[in-house]
Length: 304
Image 1 (cartoon, one colour):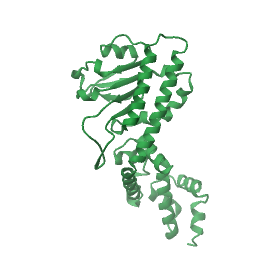
Image 2 (cartoon, one colour; image 1 turned 30 degrees about the vertical axis):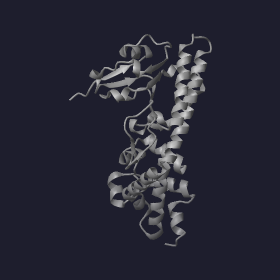
Image 3 (cartoon, one colour; image 1 turned 180 degrees about the horizontal axis):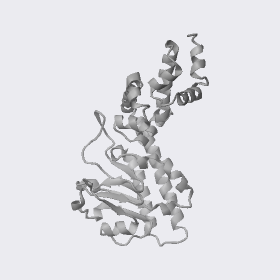
Image 4 (cartoon, rainbow, N blue to C red; image 1 turned 120 degrees about the horizontal axis):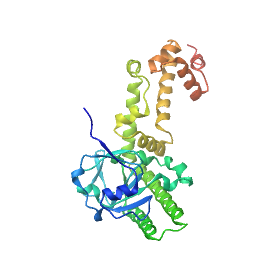
């Protein structure tokens, strides 16, 4: 059974034609005000792949924003991000198209330092449910940046146009990074609950029987269990704990290994297999990397 075909839009001009908009002011950038666009809701359910970046700026939300079991007051607006070639499904709700969308082709930043740095902005890999929710003050700052980009696009193109647009884009991404970090901090209680669930999941996965069946847990396994994207999980953990998701997995694994080594006389190979390793050598290498001792040396320190 074939799935829904994916509609690929490979240029800013093609996007303008699909939205029934005039020819774009710049071949590599478009700023769309959805108040001026009649969205074809007959396209609802269609799968779209854009060959460029998209930053959506919703200036308001209807209803309250829910996080976990509670509702929070950052309802004034929000940002969501897409990187090239991500497949998204078009919404059937007209409200999903409020506000602005900034589209820019990767060629816009090619040759600029931003081209090599943009992968560091992890929010381009976040899910839609992991959008950045803005306070009123933050919304005004982001709004002014969108207005500045719009003004520049309306300016006659000259030798400085691309430099200015890339600089404005970099500033927008820097502010977005700052506000995401704020979001992690202001929702710290909720994320602490998520970290507790993460640790419980890892404890269960390192149970000998489950490890033998499932192998070592991956960052994606952990993210799937918590119902968030892997990149959001890592960025959230780095913001709150200073460690990545992979480091948390390794730390939990090493703690479990130390407990077993300190009270058991099972062979190192048996312990490695029980923890989910396919090869004991991989366990030995990781253990020594994290503790500066081999598993055997650690065991000897307990005189077993």
